[in-house]
Image 1 (cartoon, rainbow, N blue to C red):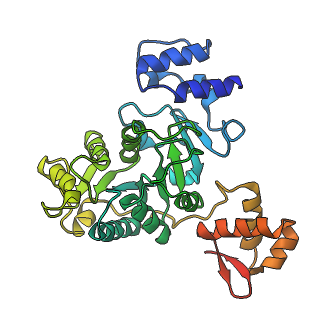
Image 2 (cartoon, helix red, strand yellow):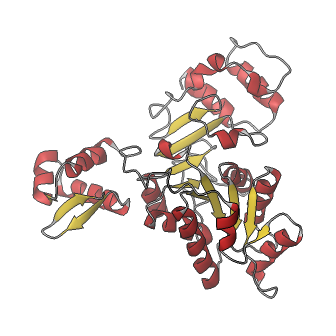
Image 3 (cartoon, helix red, strand yellow):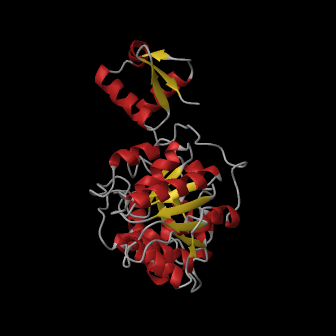
Length: 349
């Protein structure tokens, strides 16, 4: 293991205590002098070994940025104990865009799905990136709605970027998101999800966002943790009210009763409270960021022409039929290309 990789493993494995950060960093590098002040005051030039240049040669395909990188999200810097390192896969251009979190129950109702779709569509139309936790249910509806609206979305993982996320997360959805949006984690790339990771992860969902909308949540729910994090981070919090007899509405009603969330009893409230960024944001940029070298090669061939036949792609790429077919499925599922009559492929505008 290289010295640089050892440092990253040290820092990513920290709990979020200042003393722990200083101790581990001093253990990893003897060249930094420490003060008793908060860790954020460490000069950026002393942290150059954690620059955004640290990349795939150490940890597969993901990018790594430190708190001191210019790419580090400004909103996330403002929360209590932000992560020292972020591991990312996808389009980093999404990070500075205005974002809203949409979260809710895995065991959602049809009503919850309908409201999540309506809310996510409205937020997308107002120019917000949608942030959520990739779980089945409300999270998945939020991500998929953003993709359908051609707006970037950020999925925040409770495991490492390259780890098996578990049965509650769709790997196909993750692939779609990396085509134009972003996957983000503070855990080492191959770290498995544990039940302790989810509350840690939830503070990032709210921390990346200007506000959080809770669509459905039981009285004891991970979505309430996200909502409480948003409240404590002094961000906007909205909750969709429901019937007191519905278990999936009790958490939302509790947040409203405790004055921690605004009751989202009509969609106009989002229009009234939230700024409109629709004129300032680009619709879902199609970039090569997050693609493998082979995928980028095929996409570059397709985007230069009106419609390119499969046989021509096969000839110009030199790939086998199976490899090419797999790449085309990946690009098509990401919304970057579409199949047209004549077994041809065309780049989406």
